[in-house]
Length: 301
Image 1 (cartoon, rainbow, N blue to C red):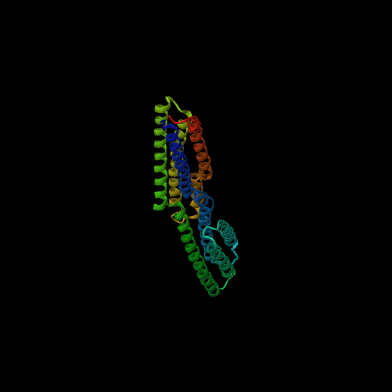
Image 2: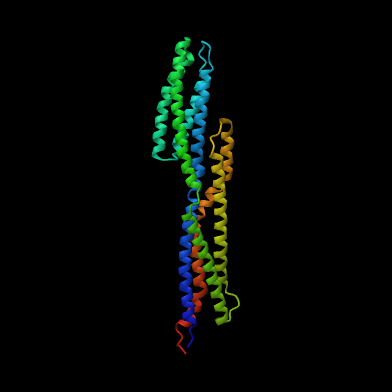
């Protein structure tokens, strides 16, 4: 009695099961890395650099007032830098890197800046050295408080960025499982083609050959993009690790933008993992179901 039909059916169900499981695990592994590429590029980096810009502007504004030892009102530079600080805080708030805590800190900083500006402007206009010194003293206390809060916020933002760029061991295990499943699936596909060639005398089986190529090449492409994304996030994190002076902030932002230029494309590929999985299973069905049907209604001999 021929068992070819039953053997083909078993292989088909094994292939479909492996294909579905491999697709799901590969999707989870890929999304685990690439879900953070776009937030790191579009949110965390602008938020961190905006905090650096606000700090630099605040320090420059205070230096403009502190260096004014004449009796004239020379707070023009002060107002310019304070405007930069306010705009930068607005950018940091819109980036919303750390969520609710981020907004609360920036609201507090905005209020403190208003108080600081009052003392600094008085110091910039004051002609009496004693009063000027007192106003500067209060302004410096306010500035130091603001700087400390911005430093603490930057520390929290960097913690978020480090988490986004990390590749923890659970994710490594998922990637290991995904690659192992891809290898097993390719091995079963190759074995099935050998079985079909031996039993049915078919030299080449195009659908199964295409499924094998799709599985191997798809896993390789997704793995390569993941390696590139992880390296780009690591390079971006290195750029953001140290607070930059005002002159280096635009260059730092441009470097991170260059590293993460393909972040949107990498992340969008995750949706195609399911499409590839469906195509893979269709190819398996197209390759084996017609052969199974040939034996389905045959009387056992």
